[in-house]
Length: 237
Image 1: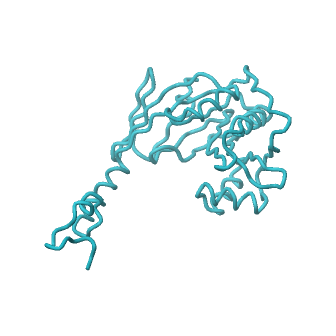
Image 2: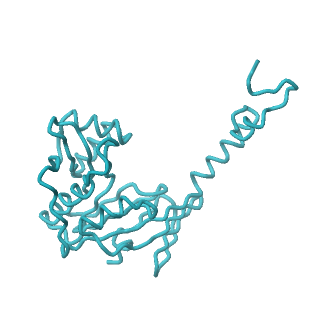
Image 3: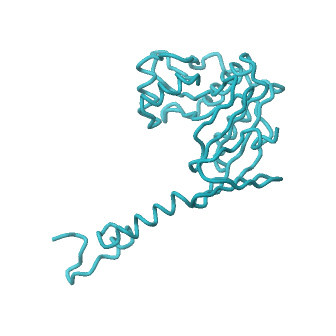
């Protein structure tokens, strides 16, 4: 007998609550479609101007490497794809577009942590929160999609990767660097501040169907979904 039904033929309360029975599928699809278009993200945007130097990593810290445009090792690419959900094609496309990967490896070469650097001499348009795009102007470095393997967490790798990424950005002519994290992510916030970032600007990103609203302390901007949000505005620069 179908476990979705009780003996008297009624739909079980558990199935109703979870929307698994075919009778409830249209409502469930409508609910998740609405959730995708009614989204709020509270974030903190940070800026690094080069005035504050990050703490030096310990002597026994894992190796930190930067892979520039072009091929990277298959092991690094597969590790990032497996953990992040990015396809190998997307990773290659990012590298071909000029983005850089900074990554930490164990002594045996195993991938421990990584992140991306967007740095160019022209304006970049990158995928961002709730279907929006983040517009990064020339001369601004942007750090994004940093992640640490579960077994390698709580070792300060995030801070060390950020420090190396900051050094690379300034060495390549960036006048400032931006990064953001979710407002409730205390671990990311600690790592960002330890790497010399400051000026944590709170922002609320709200998606309302075909429209969006980005609200900071002193400004509110409305626009159409799939539109651009300028990183410089988020950083108050």
